Image (cartoon, rainbow, N blue to C red):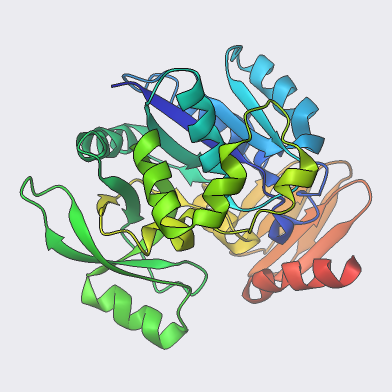
Length: 341
């Protein structure tokens, strides 16, 4: 059975301001390496066995960015669906599923956020192969990342009974972003995994579960089959994630563990943790001079940046803004951006 990658590229990534902006969010930005996160996501699945042409879901204002970045890596056959407004992942994937069914296929959907980083592509492919076995049996599969530390910014999945093959688990429950005390308990228990936001399921099975558990979303999306979604119709749709709308309610979900060097790059701290560092724990990108700097991230895009004697800092320079923040306050960048609006 064919796997259709469904690439979710509609977010705005405000925690990575000033590189991530409304018109050029983090998935389309060059945060590290020679490709954007969006392009890295596509290349990660380019040689994944059994895949068909991708479906890309993005905001209508980013259509030009998407087409340019697809062409620059040689992707010419992806179907693009344009959202006039973001309504989270449950409606987005429903529209993709309805569209594919209308074209006469009922493939397995591999749902992938376009703004995540993965260190081991080969291990990721191995986990997808495991998930495929269960998705072909009409299970809804989520991927749980083995946690490396207590983290309050992620949702958690409690793994239950090990299934017969020994490579996947029943799901006991989902827990959203616990406090630090609970996060410590979860990691120590070895029963909880980070919720990666990646899924695999058959298109028709997902729609059946959506109809059963979130009928209002199903009904709005059922009649949408277009390159560009009708804004008036879509505005009536409730905003909800796959996790809340389907996965937390279905009795038909299993989880596959991931140990692949994963990060959602949800903050400058997370980006610093993921990137390769020098002997002093620094990540330096662009025209930067440093001295006596430790455990910091410095990114210059237009001008020279000089950093002396600083530690545990994030410094980001663009043509119209400069961010200087302690790593301890990285999550507050989003709050500052909300106030600037």
